[in-house]
Image (cartoon, rainbow over all chains, first blue to last red; front, side, top):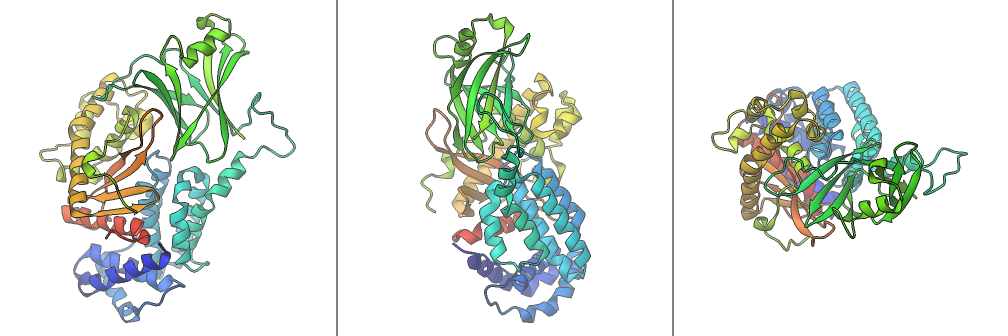
Length: 306
Length: 172
């Protein structure tokens, strides 16, 4: 499927809306948004110029745009852990819409400001927009390269590069993997009482949130069918190795470790840690191999990027 | 992209922490007006605070789950089971029947007649076969200045559905 299909659908919708858009603020706004998309596009040829004189009336009915509100919504969604194709993409689309309408309002400076600020926010949370890259690439095909809207989607499209740069070690420092860890690796502490049941819904799952030292990452343990599962979100898309480590509480000296297999699915990575206790329990095996009493140990999981 | 499953086979949002987060971010969000979707719903966030949920925990989203206290967790998760999940599941089934569905980037997007957007993905967990699961469900809030009628919520959701999925063909 292609960008031209997206524009063709916009054109069809605009033709349906145009005759009555002056009667409703929501329809008037939508008509302006669709008209802006088609006027701004360097591809396709759509007979819309007869609709341009209707824009001032539609502006009157729709009411003014609100760039700050659009920016706030994106900022809020970037800090969430929700599916990026939900409120986050909605927020970016609202910014896109607002940028189109600001042009009709003659507010080019406000459009430039909104575009720069959103692009900057996106660059700070590149991990959150990674899965939106295909949409961004499609949208960029429908935009002139120098448009403020292109700057926003360009920031999304650059997300994989941003994450790669973040994961690189500092120049001049040799990184030993996996004996030491670089600042971009992830440390997950397992609390001593991780097996304590939390309040639960009717699913009967036992779930325990974990302390993670990496911004943007979250992790938790949950029990499923008698096995303890580890789930981590927010890891970047690169290759990584995970290790479960037992260390002495008194001096943080590592006493044993085992590599664990991470399975990546969408935004999450999973690993089964075996049963809660007894034979096959990975955490108990690592603790036992340390040769130190369980009360003198703490367990952590280290994720190393390769 | 062809779907091999029906809406009735979709399982809800998994695990307590994401469930907690979605309830506080959406069901308890006054701007989303869930009383237009759930009959007799009256200020669920107020009820949560009355039940002992600290205001900060309700504003903290998923991060609030870990420290809001067991009583608050129980209350919010009960609202998930009794209110939020049945509401979005009903919208999901209705959207499926009306073919108000789009596809993009491995996700299926449904918009119910009351303007609830539900995103479903096929997910594989360690010991389970791949299955369709709800990843989020929320109402798309109309612009400031537009009346917050059920009709306007529906319009806003359908327009977002088109914008997110029409480039993949099919759908609305």
